[in-house]
Length: 172
Image (tube, rainbow, N blue to C red):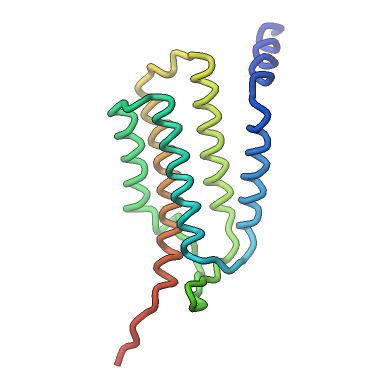
């Protein structure tokens, strides 16, 4: 297996130094979200928007304005936004007033962050190697749908926090 070892070493050596730093930052951010905390809906929404842009930019960078890739990404996003509240929205939210929400700790954000990282890392590796997978419709569709779905997961969580923070009319 000397060729496989050499290829792995060459691939690892080609990884930019900022990639492991980004991974450590994402792990730190995900770990922070395993603890109960008070959040503002705008902050959670900003993270969701940032991850949406990050994943969509990866799709566009790899596949350009390819209609099938963008459609798969959009389908993943729309599916989770439409159906994901049951499984992805945080439970036990409490409005604290003044646009603040108590958010229980959860490992879901860690999973979402690491899924985006892994998918984008795999995509970057495939692009750098000029792999034939870039022309494989099943690979492109699955990866783009996954990135869209994870973006939807962040969106569902942000929308749940926003809804919780909304003042509820008092019934007369």
